[in-house]
Length: 164
Image (cartoon, rainbow, N blue to C red; front, side, top):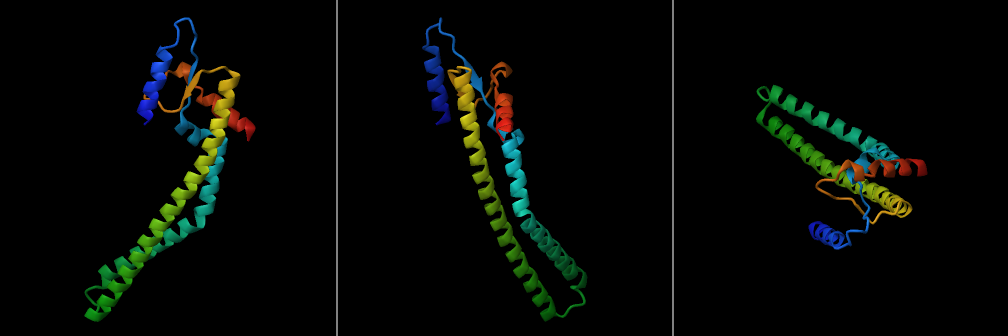
């Protein structure tokens, strides 16, 4: 889909009269997500939101590791039924850990996507304002290559930071 859009844009730009000056810009969305103030704030917000659950997951992982080490260390001295019970306990805890880990990742990804969507919406409004103010004909957000002279990512990041 993006390839078709890029081809259409390229074809339409080539069709412009040679005398017309076409102004093209490029924005690196990934850089905006890494460096723009709203994106950094969103990341910190998510980290804080998931901090307790992350600590719980780490505690559960340590508990699992201790259980496994205890099983390996004491397997020779345990009775067969005691060994089965400990293995069952370990397997139950391991399943619970896997489930919680999966839920944690899903919840984290969902929240990250929500926050990044809000950042992207603000960035797009900022890009549009810059495009109108500086009279750009087209601004691309995805490209295999973009010359540094047409890259306006830093302007967008600064505008997002200034807008807070």
